[in-house]
Length: 224
Image (cartoon, rainbow, N blue to C red; front, side):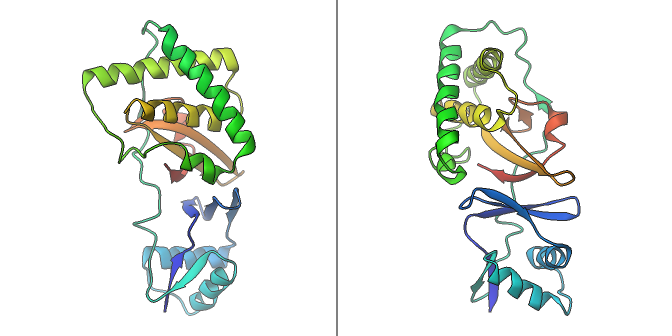
């Protein structure tokens, strides 16, 4: 018999802690040291210690792992897959256009209402096709369209504010980009001490609505 990570959980190793995001319960939680160390060894396929079986059974009893005919290790399957943030798209000299700005503001209002009413699992369900399945085109025309959309959302920050709005801003930007076939990922990251969570939109290694230095302060726990 083996184990698998329970559906609806994503995780990351942030510092010396293993942090989970439970989409079903809309919450974060971290493991204590014995369970965290056993989970790390199991997830990475490392040799277990004598105490690991009892710790893995504890994780099963607490609905973190589920029994499987054989081990289904999540290290290569469930850990977030996203490039390291290295740059920020420069749109400071781009002439703003009215239509994208209106779309950005409307999207912000729509997603603000959704975030207040819906759990994260439902928000992700309606976000739109993932970046891997969306129709991607790196043509100059699409690059220009992406820059114009980023410019519009930065202007929406001036109109609607940006403080404590990272989830709404990022969901709205990613959804709007995907509707136009533009490459964009939603990244949720955490930092352990003190615990904090953050969210941003990213295209390859370019952060769209945050600075790379700020994004690098957080370890990705979910990429959608």
